[in-house]
Image (cartoon, rainbow, N blue to C red):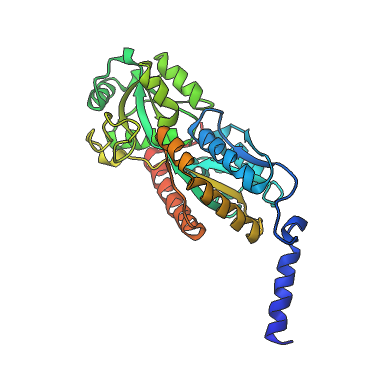
Length: 325
């Protein structure tokens, strides 16, 4: 058998694995809705980014793109649903950096975070902001640290769930500041914000996108953003480095994933349409108003990024001594 014949047969075999619609001339998307699974509650930073993307993906795909919230267990329930879904490009996962934390916190996951998913592209970076109820009387980050160190048993901090990006930002801060306090995980960002406003938890690293209206109307006080630099959405709020904690910054990003069995033509189509959507001026403007920024990457670069971020997550989990609650 000649090499050319071998190559042609290999190509035909690969083509045969594609869904019928992908083999059709022009690669039209199938006549079925696309589901974007968000493993967090409505109103979370990840959810807002997913809904922004869904609106822009629908026209080029020619089908409705529906956001479905599947919160629970730090985002692992929704991720597990996508890992088991048919690999036909109709069930996608929009997850945060917490996706790479979960293997180190939940030792008995029903899926392999790196092997069972293909990363399409990161979508956006979303800084968190350290917020407290004004009634708590914290003057700044240094004041909060001093008071917690003096009476650690009296303080607690909220998160949007064990292993969530809000939790990991809080742990990065806690480790850098040398603090001890009680972690109180909630079902999602809205619940954590409610409890922080009420003063039943003392601080929360909330996504800027979710906290901004509450900061503007005075129901929350912003002490610092959780990044190394200030956020354009909160120009008057210092960064962690400016607050004296250069090691407390956390990289909170949101990305798009599919099941690892998804054929390459589908992955490439999704990547191309998503990158185009993120480059649209109105998408950039909307994300910037929410304190976020587009974060598209070529797919190979995203895969390398995922490997690096997984290793960084393992180091933070170990340093913070975390486990599933």
